[in-house]
View 1 (cartoon, rainbow, N blue to C red):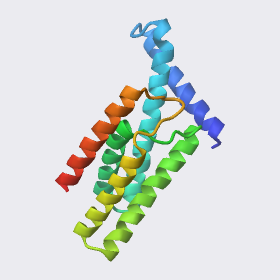
View 2 (cartoon, rainbow, N blue to C red):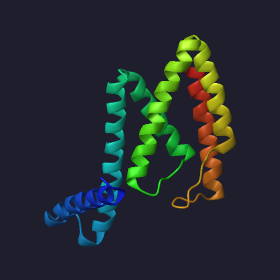
View 3 (cartoon, rainbow, N blue to C red):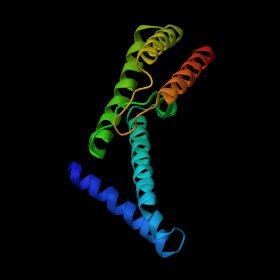
Length: 165
């Protein structure tokens, strides 16, 4: 399936769902575009969740991959991140990132004990986040106040996550 076909499929499904809500008088016609966009985002998030589950099944690590996904989503809320230009690229990059993290996790665990791996991971993650977060995107610019707020939240969440390890 090409990137164009994936986008068309997601847009058609979203339009169909929003149209159904409009026909049933659940939403107003002037709100339809907002609902279509919301359905597109929801479908993309469901697709990413299915990718995570598939990777978890393939690698026999459902719990580990679900923990990764939970941390990834919560950090992405406050740290921002890369936005691909197409849904297909987004799904491929996300799946690759998830798979690489699972493989790297197994590799680190093979050569170190669990505590050492957690400490190394926490330090590297903290340094990266301190240097780069929040990441801006042209589709989601941040004001100075938002940058300051998200950096503060990121620092607090990052510190508490590390303390909980």
